Amino acid sequence: MFTPEEIAQQIPFCLGATDFPTLGEKYEGKVRDNYIKDGRRVLIATDRLSAFDRVITLIPFKGQVLNQIAEFWFRKTSDIVKNHVIAFPDPNVVVARECLPLPVEMVVRGYLTGVTTTSAWYHYERGGRNFCGNVLPEGMRKNQQFSRPILTPSTKAAHGGHDESVAPEEIVGRGVLTREMWQKLADISLRLFARGVEICAEQGIILVDTKYEFGLLDGEIILMDEIHTPDSSRFWFANEYEARFSRGEEQKKIDKEYLREWLAARGFIGEGEIPAIPDEIRVETARRYIEAYELITGREFEAEVGEVISRIQRNVVGLSS
Ligand SMILES: Nc1ncnc2c1ncn2[C@@H]1O[C@H](COP(=O)(O)OP(=O)(O)O)[C@@H](O)[C@H]1O
Ligand SMILES: [Mg+2]
Image (cartoon, rainbow, N blue to C red; front, side, top):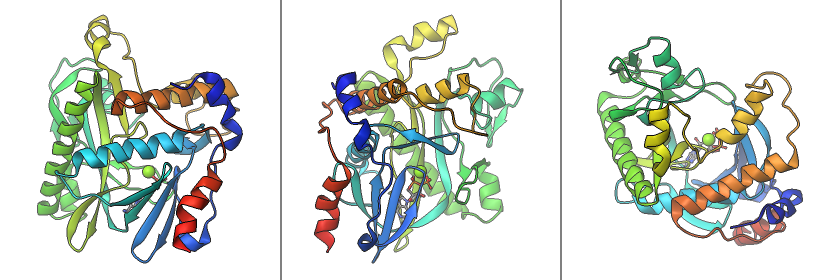
């Protein structure tokens, strides 16, 4: 495991932005720079951290952690659904097949939790007993496990917008997806989630909830974007779950909640000026991302302190020209 001192040395080399016009037309997401050309999409995971739908700061090694956790899961789930992966030519990069994105994010939740206004717990605490078409029993407590994982899809907002949770009936009713397509996506999502839960359990982790994005290619459903990363999922430590739950305490988390809570404690929940983030907070956030990689994959995180951009230039841009 990297020491805080080693992580701090990477701060000047954080990957904030890229500019590789030969790779194709650029789409800058919150976290990934995408280059699209000839049916291929090169996704470069930068070190940008987004929270409350805003880009907050750069976290050393975050891009690599994210890309390599996704790589791990794409391999572990390729028997369930085809995915967009062509190659991983660099620790921060995946070359993918360009898909026609389906306009729904498939959110799967195993536990009644969350903090934001779109979370299941926020809804439940205020008396809501029907969450995206899932009828929830009375008397549940925060962080309690659902009797089985529930699907709470949300429609993908355009660039910069906020996503909106909707019931499957509405997705079909509004003509966003056919009923048949919805059923297929629902089935695949629940199977992916079950696989994630199973592999995490072997590692002593609870996969709490996650979201999947799918696209179409030649009429076939393809899993795209990322899978079971700390940006798209919540993870808790399994060994402390029961004790904390019975005492009514918060769970021990392995995700980006750390920085979100730091921001929220300073009154920032998405609007107005972003507070300046001290280096030690960035280092601690990085340490947690690296820990997430090691816990989830069971492997040691391997990286070198130094320039990321020039390595990507060599590994990816060098190849295509
Ligand atoms: N194989 C693919 N084909 C088409 N679009 C994709 C594919 N994989 C990922 N995407 C899209 O690329 C973007 C990835 O960059 P990201 O930083 O996550 O962006 P965002 O801010 O939109 O979440 C997302 O908008 C995602 O939907
Ligand atoms: Mg994204």
